[in-house]
Image 1 (cartoon, rainbow, N blue to C red):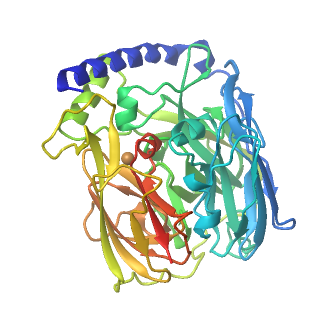
Image 2: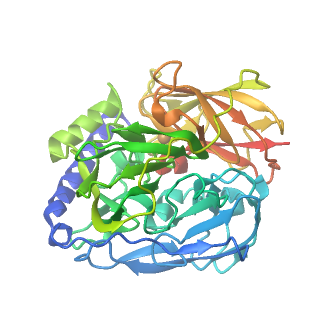
Length: 502
Ligand SMILES: [Cu+2]
C-alpha cells in the first residue's frame, strides 16, 4: 500500500467512526436506566477440585434498553464465572468447546507448564473437550482465563471469552482484607465496546483499529453498560481486570478519593499504597481498597487513552480521526458506587498485608532484547521505510511476525533472565506466559512507576522496559510459552513470539 492510498483508507475509516459517534446519543445509551452491577457467580473449586467450563454462543443485553447481542461466553452468554482455587490445590479442568470454531483457552497468570498453559498450540476443535490438570502453586492473586486462538484472539475475547481466576490461601481474614464475594470484595472486568444504533455489540475493525488496537466508546463492567454498585459503608476491595482489546485506562474517582493499591498481576503488595490515578493496560490486574465509610456516592472514571502514537504517521492518524469525528475521548464513566446504610466487616485500612518484596535480582543467566515492531511491507515502521504490498499492517517482534512453527527463544529452567523490551510509535503491553517478573526499569528511568511495583506478568512498554524474569515452569517445543503484545489486534497481526523452557 502506498502512502496516498494509506491516507485515503484512513480517511474512510475516520468517516465511519464519525457515524458511530451519533450512536452515543442513541436511546439505548441514555443513563436514566442504569443496571445494577452484575457479579458473575463464584465457581468455588476449593472443595471439589474440578473446573468445568463450556465455551458457548449466546445472547446478551449490555444496557437495559439495548437489543440483544450475539456473544460468546464460558458457562454463560457473555464472559465466564469467577473461578476460585486454593494455593497448593490440584484442579482437574475440563474445557468443552461448543462453538462452531476452534478455541484455545489460556490461563493468564497461572504458573503452570506449557503443556497445560492453553496457548495457540492447544486449540480445541468444535465439539471437543480439553482436560488439563492445573497444579496451583503460587501466591494468592487475581489471574484470568481467555481465548488465545491464533489469529482470532481479538474477536473471540471481544465477543466475551474471558473470566477471572482467583487464587486464595484462605488467609484474607487474618490480613484484615475484605473477602466477602459480591459484598465487600467486588470483581470488575473492565472492557470498552462499540455498539450499533440499537445497542448491539459491534466489532468491525478498520485500518485505525488494526494499527492502534480496537477501542470502544463505551465502557462495560462485567458486561453491563455504566452500572451502579451498592456497597457497604466500609473498606471495599475491588479486583480490577483490564479485559479490553486495546484500551489503556487511567482510573480515578470523580471526588478525587484515593485507591489503595494492594496487589498487582501476580500477588499482594506488602502494604496498600494510595494513589489518585491508576493506569491499567490490557491484561493487567490490580486489586485496590476503597474507603466508602463516609457514605457518599462516587463514580469511577477513566481519562483519555492517549496511546495513539507520537509524532509521525500514527500521531497524524490519531489527530485526523479526532478532527474529523470530534471524538476526543474525554473522561468516560465506568461505574458508580452507592454506599448503603449497613456497615461492612472492615472499617479500617490494613497497614501490612504481606511480607516485604524480595530484593530485585542482580545476577542474570542471560540478557535478551525484544523490539516490538509495527511493520508495513515487511519493514519496521519508524526506521525510515514505508510502503509495501498492500496487505494491511503486519506486526512482529525483532522484525519477525509470529510463526507457529518457529521457536524464537530457548530458556534454561530454573534461571532468572534480564529481558529488555523496546517499543516505538505506540505503547504496547507485553505479557509473558508461565512466569512472573519484576520490573527493573521503565519509562520513568531507574525507579519504576507505582503500577510497576510488585510481581507482574504484563508490563506496559512505553519506549522501554526492563524486567527480571524467573523461569520456574517447563515448556516443551510442541507446547511452548508465548510472549506477546496484549493489544489483541497486534497479537493477532503477529506481535508475538514463543519460547521453550527446559
Ligand atoms: Cu501492541
